[in-house]
Amino acid sequence: MRLIHFAQALTLILLAITGYLAWEGQQAARGAKRELEHLKKVQAAEEAAKPAGPQALPVIPPVASITPPAPGALAQSEEPGLLPGPGALPGGGLTVPKTVVAAEAQGINTNTLTAAQQQVLAAPAVAKIKTVVKEQGFVILDAGSKKGLAKGQKFNVRRDSAILARIAIADTIEEDEAVADIDLASIPAGVSIEPGDEIIEPVGSSR
Image 1 (tube, rainbow, N blue to C red):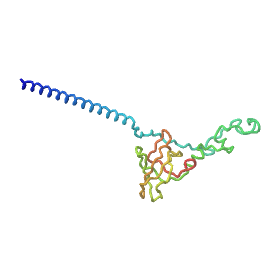
Image 2: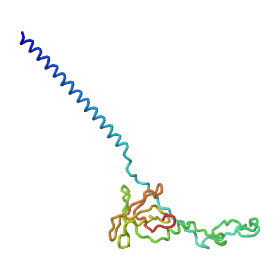
Image 3: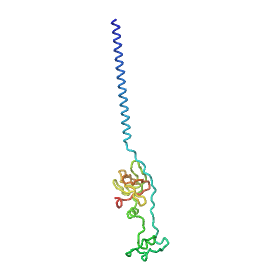
Image 4: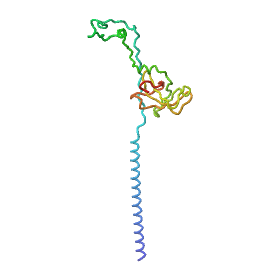
């Protein structure tokens, strides 16, 4: 009889231990699941907080400079009021010219480029851009130490009579090639640097 009671007690103890172990396993599984869900939330938050990669700027076609016609290229068109006389403004002023020829006859400059644009256009090219690595923010030039390029030198990127950006020569300089970092803040909205754009010394207000 005692043996039966002992066996029953042992069975109950084993059941209690098994139940406790099962409960502890469930708690551990729930804890692992909660930790996994927390890690997923942290990873999702980190992914959402990552800044978007550099986007390629849209390419715009170069703006062709407008060359005014040479004096006398247009047919003379004498119209009343172009010269001082009956059509003159009060006080002896001249009337507003209505043709390029009439404007030039009065000594008015008809060049459409500003002084700054003319200065940019007249600046000699130091080098040309050979490769643009937009994702890393640098360009490769087709000139190097042979042309006197050195680390830290700053230049402007020119296309026609417009300044597109500022660059600075980086560490990598070879005889006929150099790497330059782009000052991304200097690029106007909607503009992108392309191979073939020229490098010039800073001019005017772009220094």
